[in-house]
Image 1 (cartoon, rainbow, N blue to C red):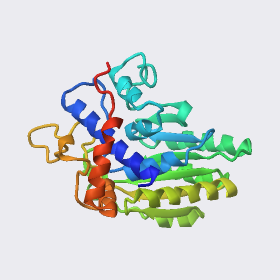
Image 2: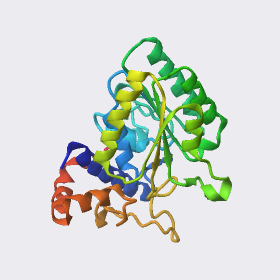
Image 3: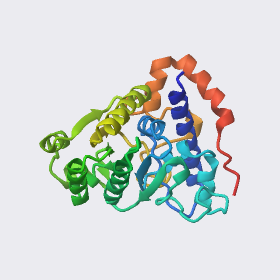
Length: 295
């Protein structure tokens, strides 16, 4: 199994452990897990080099877990401990880790796009081979900052990748319930920005795509947009199950696969390697568990 695929499995395990902590109401801060986004998270994390800038949303837990030298420091941050990832000062929704490239996280819709343009402008002025990646979602596509940021990035030929995590859901409404359809590919075409879409949840494929994107964006100093179709396998914030009527039933005792569909990147891995080999990898992951008892 490739290294990136093992990291995806570890990330699923770590998130499911935190989900168990959330059920016990361990944390006083809201934790926005990214169960179902592992392929995307690992792919982005794999192309962040020293000097690059990664700008995230409130749903930054998965990224910080993958990029931190010690993933358990993320859990300690949620505890508010002095030895947390940000010394217990940032909590969850605005958690950053500049040492690993996470320079900004914001819970304000589309707010990070403007900041990402500033970071990318800095890379361009310094003539470095670095670039910026900003994560946003289908809800942020409705904000003026999304359009203005993309036009600005194109106008100034910024080395920036805008990643739209499109899970067709924002807080408590689906896309069709709140707005008309937005053809992102046509918008990008109208201003001459490269656009591509990913949806098969194969982590190795995603890594290859983002490696090519990094080379293209830094060499041409020109922005690109990647729309990734994802399915969030947990609630907006909090554990699953979170209440008696909660339809989401995520139990760590049931194994790493949550849904037996291609919407689950870990199911995609299991199908790729076969149930027997996959079960062997699951068993070997025991030694990588987070230390959930550290307070």
